[in-house]
Each structure stands twice: as C-alpha cells, then as structure tokens.
Image 1 (tube, rainbow, N blue to C red):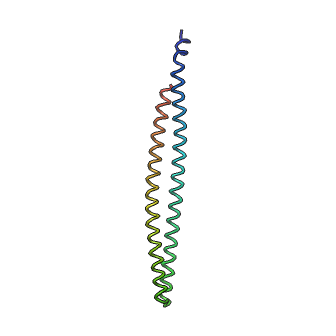
Image 2 (image 1 turned 120 degrees about the vertical axis):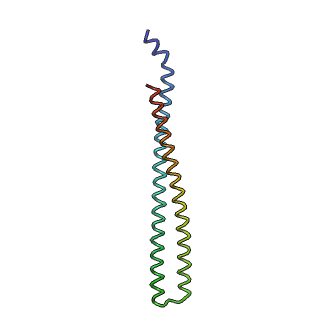
Image 3 (image 1 turned 90 degrees about the vertical axis):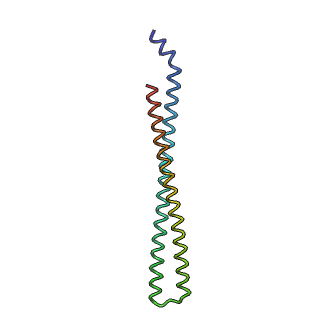
Length: 125
C-alpha cells in the first residue's frame, strides 16, 4: 500500500526536485555575477588609484618646475593637465560608486537566490 502512495506522489517530488535544481543553478549564476561585479569594482579602484598617483606626480613636477623658474606658459600647461586629472578623478570616483551599487545589488540577488534554494530544498524533503 505504501508503494502506491510513493508512486502517486512521484510526479510532485519530481517537480520539487526540478525546482530545487533550478534554484541551485540560479545560485551559481548569482555567485558568478557577484564575482564579476567585485572584479570590476577592483579594476575601477585600481584605475582611480593610478589616476591619483599620476596626479600626485604631476603636482610634484609642477612644483619642482615652479621653483626652478619655469616659464609661465609651462605652468599654465601643468595647471591645465592637473585640472584634467582632477576631472578624470571625479569621473572615476563616480564609476567606483556606481559599481559599489552593482556589487550590493548582486549580493542581494545572491542572498535571495540562496533563500529560494533553501526553500526548494525544504519542499523536496
């Protein structure tokens, strides 16, 4: 008699098992998204750090040349270059902030997918 009950409930178990497998695939995809978003964040942070280093070196060079009596036109060129670097820094900083939001969203999606996997696992049991 119990053999018949198991047989009759097998389609329900199969559906729940497929839902669990799909939830597991979604978790794997969400983990990959988090890894990619964090990798992009690290790349953008390195790019911003390089810009800051370049900016500091340009500032140092400008001050050294100012102390040695460089012509005014060279000083104007240095100031323009520094202004461009500061603008680039602001753009890079905004891109880092934007990527932080992407990472946070990817982590939230992963948390949601993990919760769905836990629920699907409970339903299979």
